[in-house]
Length: 101
Length: 79
Image 1 (cartoon, each protein chain N blue to C red):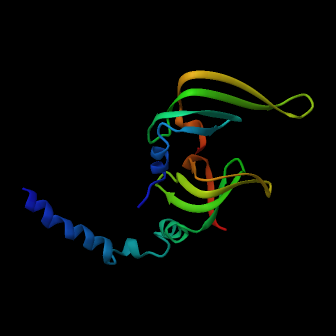
Image 2 (cartoon, each protein chain N blue to C red):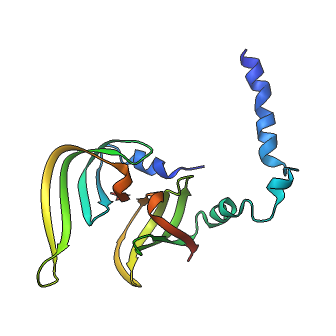
Image 3 (cartoon, each protein chain N blue to C red):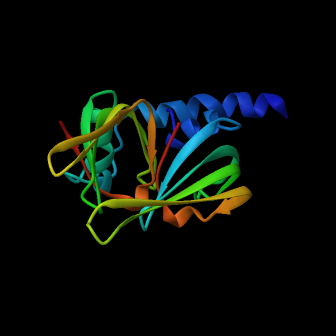
């Protein structure tokens, strides 16, 4: 039983590595959101919330809800620095956009 | 791939600050959370910010031994 699992694993890795031939996946811009996030991870970003408050910091992680963690964060409102703190978690439902700084 | 909620897990049993909608903040010890950001906090101080008659920011505080925060009001979590 355990051997069957061991055989299945490399197949999963293969799908991740190779380019898919499906026309849907190759449509330009289809993966734009996740590619953009992957590009920005570890870089300086601006996250604006629906309340117009911005958080500037190093993008650490994003999930499917658009929950975001930032490192070395500055809270900015109306172009002015409000406060600074280390790591923050931002709930995805409050996010208006993520932009490269 | 690191997940944003990993940071919240790392804050378990730490004192955290939670910013909520409607100008509220909670400071307390994180006892538990879920994927909606519902959170159980202990030894909590709630602060409500408002403007007084002179347009100055006014703070009202309240204390609670233990409470459950509904996740949909959460804006931000930090230490």
